[in-house]
Length: 117
Length: 107
Image 1 (tube, helix red, strand yellow):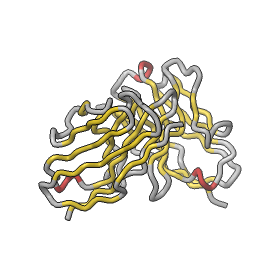
Image 2: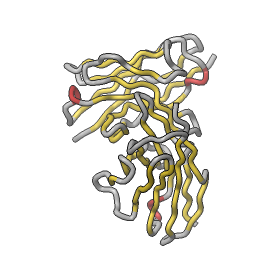
Image 3: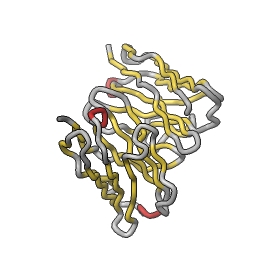
């Protein structure tokens, strides 16, 4: 079976840090470009970060640039998002997503991140 | 960055109706336009990529069209299971942008 499973969400204080993880199964993870997409409560979808197959030159949305870092471990079939200097408006469900045809064809179930004093 | 304007924001229609959701891009996006359906409490599901290519398992009543800056998702014969929120998404040079979403309700 093909799936993505996120973990690491939870409650953090403003200025704090969290590290999200995503484990892939059922497909050749090392050959796929990957992303994180988030959705604030009751709001729409927002792309956060992209990483290519080799892990080179990751890209981040302007709103998280300099605070979030995407990385991957192909040997473990895992994707990560290191989130530092968290802000209240980073509160969202974070989805790990596989990218094909410059869009997102597979999504995890999401992990909730809440940033609150 | 490319801006996407999606309309309408909500849509109420009856079973069997033909419904259309549109997305307008702030600049030409070639063919990198996708559509997603999201049910409450669930992750989104991609329906269409590259403007008009249906993903595997997506019913043929869904279709995508458009070019340049104007794109549309059409549901020909709305079914009860088609409720949810629909999003368009565009890609342009390592930036991915979603439309604001269209909530589809069944009358």
